[in-house]
Image (cartoon, rainbow, N blue to C red):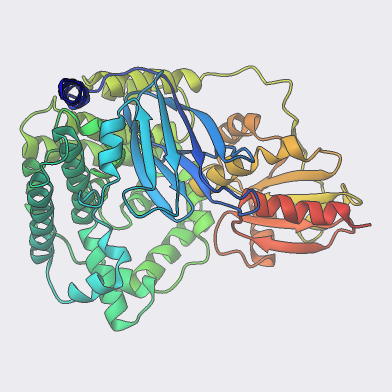
Length: 543
């Protein structure tokens, strides 16, 4: 009996120790995640990836752990602070709390019932194990992806939609608070993630109602945009922000905190605002003016616009004027948020300040004067630490000698002969052609996903060729390709437009596999790394 009391007492102490999460601090380091997948089959092509949040850039970094034949894995995950990361394995999708320089282990059995498929040990084991239990509500899915919910909101107004979202959130919080079998921290984090998911739905109100209208009337996306182009939200719509836990001391533990602020910024910039500003303030050519007018007309009449890449090129070309517009609109937006929150130093306002910084960091440029001014207003040490670290990363780097990176001159041939000339350079070898752009986050993610293949397939067997349009900022492109082994071509507008029309592309990325004779044998927008490797090996082994 005494032994049982001691075990229970030690268990209680352990729970108390893990149930008192401190306020997260900036601590750049690597968390170690290891584990074993029960009954793992190396031939199962199991989807296994880890998304690491970046509160500044909003777009997560994706890692692809290597699973050994016996089902074991171990991976080091770079973090700026203790935070949740997202793991996808098979059809399972969950988040877990990790800490820099700490180790977490997970035993995975996807055949077990829900709540028993993942067993954690190590750092934050109590919270992570409780998080897997179905009794806790940890997510509110986006309304715009749910057909049934879209049907239910097709005829309501913005304030009615807001009430529905907030009522649902309150119900989930009440439910979670009643689950007293779980630690207070697990319930708090569950409530916070529900709050931030709810905020995402609220911040996409205009889009949700527009999508519901599109579904109900069975019209195109372009027609729905045109129908809602003059419908604005009430002036006080976003006052709900002051009633949500956006400044909670544990908020930055949550994987989805980066979703709490996206649409309000856009809602306070008019439709086509940037394009109209450029028409008035940038020294556009007649051709560029025509493109913008055609874009405005297409938007207002609800017809598809086929020259989207031309608009991006104009925005990139007139970077100063584009940034002037963003600075002006963001300054107005920040003033609006200050009015709602009544505290210019709170976490939420600091996060708002990072939005403008993120826009500039997508160019991979070091901190400029406006970013310095914005950074000087931030007080949160995690944001400041990330900004400093990312700014250092954007300083000029010494080229890595071990990388097989080649910036190639585009052949001086006609546009219609360009592709044939490019692939003729490697006739007799299998080729992988990647159409991508620096501003395309999906392109960059997939490049990172496929990059490890180059260690398994030698360059003498497969030529990896990357084609990008002039809408990719050239300096940004030169920085990014330092980590992408292969041949790189920066095409001009005529060359890119010809290939875009020739291959009837509708978006990026787009990939081609070319056989040894120069024939296109596969075209796709995404397949897994394992599938790509198999396709390449099939072509390599052909005589």
